[in-house]
Length: 371
Image (cartoon, rainbow, N blue to C red; front, side, top):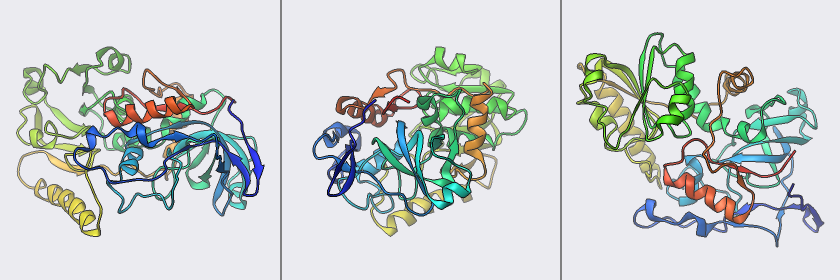
C-alpha cells in the first residue's frame, strides 16, 4: 500500500492527487484534456485533514468518480460547486478504514478500525483521492467484510441515484433506461427488477454486459431507434429513465410512438446537455426554471410527463439499503472494465479521461491502497 505520511511544520502530511487551479473551459467542454490539470503529489506533500465536528478521518482504500468531479474540474458550475482553495484534492465517494472519530462519530456507533463507505460532503466531490480523507458521519455507513473496498466505492452517488430512481417504479411497469451501461444505468437496470418492473429495456452498445445484469432487451442506439421500434409500439413503455440526455432524450420522447399515454419520463441529467454551465445566480434560476417549465407544461395533454430526478440524497437509509442488497447478492456493483485503476499519476489521469468521455461502462474507480 502507498503510505508516505510524514511529520513536518504543518503536522502529518500525505500523498494525494491535486488540481492546482481551475480555469473555465473555453469552447467545447468535450474537447478539453482534463489529464493536463491533474498531478499526484510526491513533493511537496499535502497536509493530512483534521477531524472536525460531524466528521471522521479514514484511511482511503478506494475512490470512485462521478459526473460532478468533471463539473468541478471544468469550472463550468463554479457558482455552486467550487473548491474553497487551491490546490484541491478531487474525488469524493470513498471507502476506507476509520482512523479517528469526532464525538458525533462515536455517538453514531462508529469505531476506529471500522470498514466504511461514504458519499462526498457539502460543496461537491473533493478530498477523496488521497491517502486520508475526512467524511461526514451522516453520509457514512459500515461496510461488511464480504464487499471489497473497490466495489463499495462504486455505490455512493451513481448507485444511490439509481436507487432513488428505482423507488419511482410501480409494480408491472415496462421500463426503458436510456444509457443502461453507465454508472447510474448499470445499477438502475438491476434495481428496476427488485422494484417490480415486468420488463426492462436499455439503450447501449454493451449487450452482453446488460444481459448478464438482467436486461430483457438491449437496444443498440447505433442502429435502432427506440422511439419507433414496432415491438414497443405494440407493447409500449410506461416509464423512461434518461441517464444520458441529448437529442434522443426528452425532445424525442415527446413524439415517440413507443410510450403509453402519460408515460413517466424521468431525467437523471439536468437539461439536454451534460456539459451545462452555471456561473451566476441567474444561471441557476434559468436552469431550474427550465426544468420547472418542462414539468409544468408536460402536466397537461396526453404526452409523457417530465420529472427531474435529484439524486444527491443519501439520507433515509438508502446507502445502507444499497450495502445490504450487495451483501445479500441482489445487487452487483458495476466497475468500468479498466478499473480499478492504480493510484498513480497515470492511473488518476486515465480515470478522469474515462469519466469525462461519457462512455465509461460502469463506475470509474481508483484503487488507492490495500487493506
